[in-house]
Length: 311
Image (cartoon, rainbow, N blue to C red; front, top):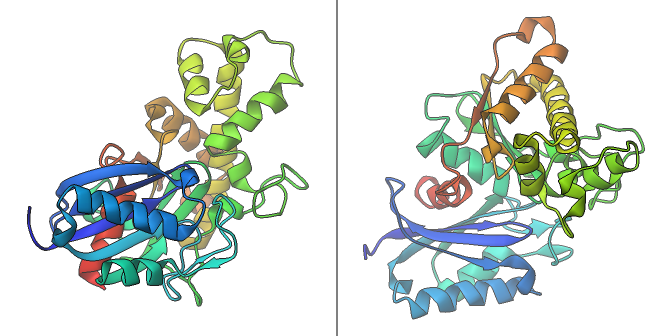
């Protein structure tokens, strides 16, 4: 094992993926634990430490880069993340630094994904793009002129909490109608219940005891009209929002990352169609929709690890 490897940590609402990565983006070791089994942030820190210790790779850790929901690059804290068990302001960078005794850097998970895509994935040729992470929630990482945008106190790029439906679905952030309540893995599941009450279609999807977003997309591919309606609704909601957000940063491309994005080119094409319908005329036919090429490798782990080398 190489002695100088970056530990990239991607903390999601469901899973925490982590890996040891060299400067060239080669992952030498990777693993995953359930975030929800870590009732306190220190539990997660200790679990990762002990796993690496047991695997005899702990001494290879040169530095740590972390991507986390509501992760603040400036403060090193997770601040009021709606999709995590840990509430309030969590000094995560400090916790990792004290346990591992190496340099540690923290950023938002979607920002980490954007860095990963630019350095190793679908955005290596881009200077202006936005990564949209479609997981338990919805995050966005914005790069303009090759610079990741943090804002004045570290929280730029919360596209998931742009409200798209007035007085709509209740969001974990406490507001109503946020984009992630419609366009995320959990949002897709909520659409099953909402749309079921509005039409009388029969569907194999409704016979699944606890359906998830993958079930929806798989049934849609098999011709299930009810599932197709949900997929179309999801694509339209996302496409319309991306059309509006183009007015802010004029991106060359949106990079879709996560399980929903990996459902296939058809979804990306639908998002593109609905985006083009609503784009301001000066942006029409100028913005690409790309699918992450790092899904199997985890763009956020790679992006988080790159923080060690560039900061």
